[in-house]
Length: 208
Length: 234
Image (tube, rainbow over all chains, first blue to last red; front, side, top):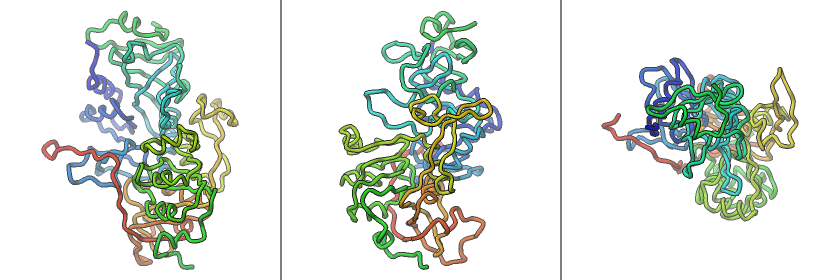
């Protein structure tokens, strides 16, 4: 059985180690926060916060306290606030250990596309280009194939890039793959999924 | 010189003209200078360029200036929460220059700090890098980005003293600091003006040297995405 969204998020949470400062993207990456368990993880929100807490209890929403997805959130005893230039200083400067984010396409050389589809509505890259260029380790969480059944793990991206050669690890509904010299290496298969099934669902070169 | 004004219109008096570049603070609808934007709408100046991370929604934030077609160009990282914006953008009436969010913030900070350009690895190998100067440092490639110096900066803070020292609240600080820094002149709207000496000098977020005019007012502070959890889950 391929992993569902929550199982992918739980697998992604295994990437996080005690003491890490981490930035989570929107979508499945946001769910990763539910699976960190006892690990001491500090979440960064690029609009200017370290130590992001859960959604507020109804009635306690604060218009001055939102995350990068513009959702109301809460602070924690460890929280620190700062301005946008400082926020991206710590991102660009490599102080954030890991970013977990979604993708439309990933190529075998680690190229990532997740911000625009030519001819469709372009809303902008937000902080995605800064994050993938700056953080120490980039983990992508995505479905292995699109709704038409076409692979999203390609020899080279067809969409405009968010970053060139930036992805370290890909967690899909079928398993875990690392970007290595010469292509992608299968690290792990989802329960009941075989390496052959992953290869068949992947255009990118799979190396042993 | 007295910095405090009694209305947003007065705080902007003599500063507005057509075709100007305005840097605005805020992230989404959080920490936006809502009163000054309304006053700019009322002043009727047109062909404006805004350096602002976002473009508001249809009836709030910069969106109110899009409705009146006062905006010619946006320099932003993420837009399109607003139908009129998308219509003007798709029809070619509105120009949009996309900037990675951290690049936009640093362009403002740099412009305000007397740095006309800087090198960053953000966007190397992407569309953003096209036509920009590339340079290698220590074996890695970087692109040059220009500092932004705006004709006017408009920002929103929580508290000010009469000398313009500002304190922001929670994540409403965001782009307000770099936007204020990059303005040739900066107007701040605040929730409260407090007596001189009542702010702890160690806790000032933006020193008054960057802030030329201040106005106090009532803020709607609209929430864009209200997300909550049930009390029993807490």
